[in-house]
Image (cartoon, rainbow, N blue to C red; front, top):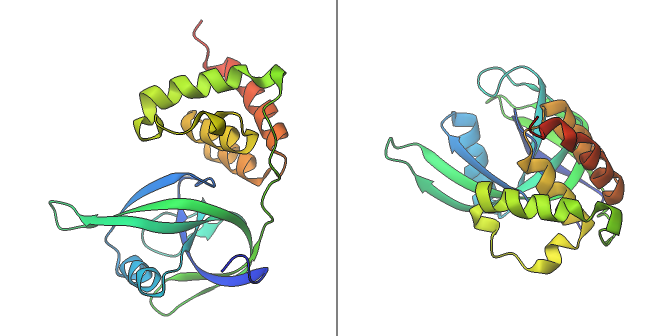
Length: 200
């Protein structure tokens, strides 16, 4: 879909978190509008857009989403013991929301413009410490990524997005890192953020 046209209409799922390209998102679905969203996406083999909530809440009235979000594709689903639907989605291409509308059922739809993919970039020597830090964080916080090929850590795009999702950042910071278009700038900003988390 993303490769055929620069624009598309997507169902939007405003959340209090940021999904990065290549990221993993686990959700429990219970509102009828989002159950419909999952059914539609599964039936049509398409994704939905995840945007950070700028105003409002995840439940109830439609929230105000950030203008830049990430395509999410459902890769697995299950039913929890309490009967609620759980899904696992993976982050894909980023987009900018040009306009939104609310359906009668309360589901938010957005006309989006796809962002071009970032060009591959090796991790420069002066930022190599971020590779080690990310490996340690993966070991503790993201065991599902322990077996990723070593080349991933040499890719500034992959490294920046993984470090951004693993660090305990605020929503505004996560959104800013999502909106950067230069993977080396993203890594440099993450390097500058790191001293905040160092133990005294």
